[in-house]
Image (cartoon, rainbow, N blue to C red; front, side, top):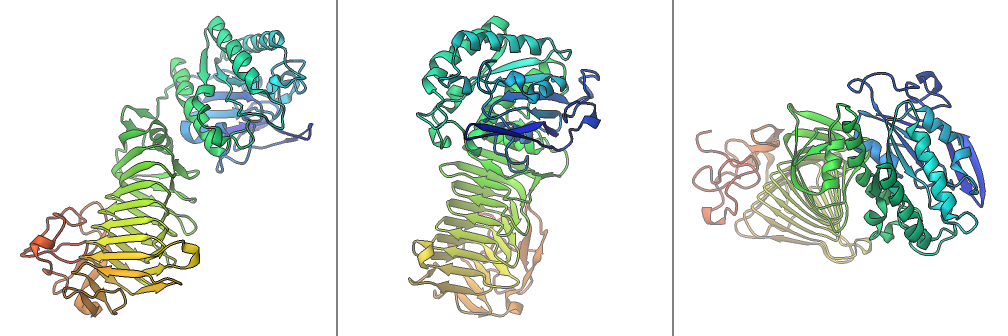
Length: 544
């Protein structure tokens, strides 16, 4: 995708200053004018050219930040729409629709640039600044809006025009923008023009009316508010492109989504699920920014989808219940694979990063593998972490004032502590960890003003130490690495990598059948694999 913008104007203390801005792509040498990319006309065929979209608006639209740090809705749309679209952001802070307003959009270079792009789709969101006392004249606003519609319709590209009902104004504000005028006068005019010109009207007002918390100054949305606007616009923009004959499609058709970042983001925007992805072969999707899960949703990569990012890959918002299945989630040395503040279930997945998982909510992991660098694999800060039939490898778990339950799992570290449990003042609570039927290849440590609690429910093994509180008769402690017989992390079958138990391991055939708890191991192999069950995430199969 190409993300384009011309001149960025900032309104401060009533004075507007403008400076030339640059985007990725987009220059006069590309065939556009005024620094705006594009081919300068409507040539080409829908099958081969990108869908050019022009966003006309004021400060809620104008370029802020960068496409990799999205703040406003056009930048979020860049991530949602994918590579078939070329976006031009021509928003200017303080701009009015009325020619007699204090900053008429008509007189700004961005308006000329928007027309020079020869867009296929145009969105118009002007009217909020028109409601200031010194600007507002309803008849003049409607007449000038009508003129802009007709000017855009006269372009040789014959764009599809989407009229946007502005977002609400949540009370008094420093800008003297009047919410009652937006509601009672601006919205009816836009609705009337939509009917008169047979144009689609996108109702951003109703979509945001319950989200006043996302408008800290009563007028401008936060990044999360911008994302909600983008989610309302992505469908109408794609539908407009499809109606013009472009070979694009919605990122999700029913419960099947494109095997792309846009497909993932669209599934989240739609909510519900489960959603699968049309990955014909194992596919790596490199994200441009963190994927925020802010709706209740189930995403299923079916083992073919890797999501890779240089920022936290998935960020799960508080008050959200989500599920990730069959995914490989790869953060890097400075980012997490998952940052969770909600209620999250992870199944049949592999997560890496630094830490691979940062949890401050409620996280349940089943049949999954987490690997981290020398720092830690999982950071659990005042959260609830439940691990079942899962593996933590390379580095361990840091528990800061949270509750951790480890069952039928394997924790194996190359350096550092397998478990570090902290109950200091910064953790705001006790740190409790309970183990059942699990292997800890490494040592545990408890820190803090209040004691960290390690509880064993039996049939646990600690290798090369006695530090994890394994005090039940069925526990084994200070087991040598040779006697533990734990293989390297590798593909031993199943959807995720595991540490196999080597022949002669003291973890084999230890747990009576009535204490096995689960019917399969992490790979999906049956438990017991022999007369009794094995300790940890891997079950040796009789005769193997």
